[in-house]
Picture 1 (tube, rainbow, N blue to C red):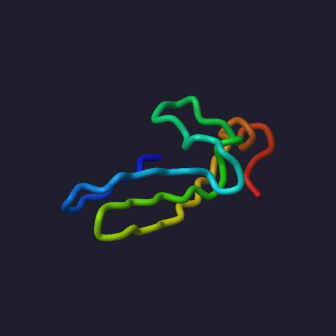
Picture 2 (picture 1 turned 90 degrees about the horizontal axis):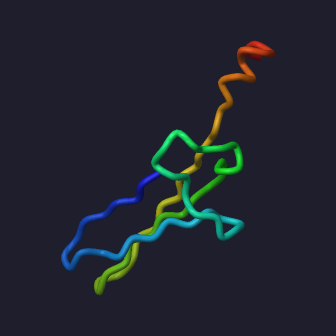
Length: 70
């Protein structure tokens, strides 16, 4: 998960998982089900701030192989 924003002046961008202080999932294949949840991305500069919520769902492929879909 990468939060990005552009503006003039360039905004400071943060992304936090709502409900705890966990960092966003890493940009690698090492994502776990613990990374699932809602993240709030905030961009702030001298003109104000903007917020967006992003919901991350982590699906486990091996579970589908063991139990099938549905």
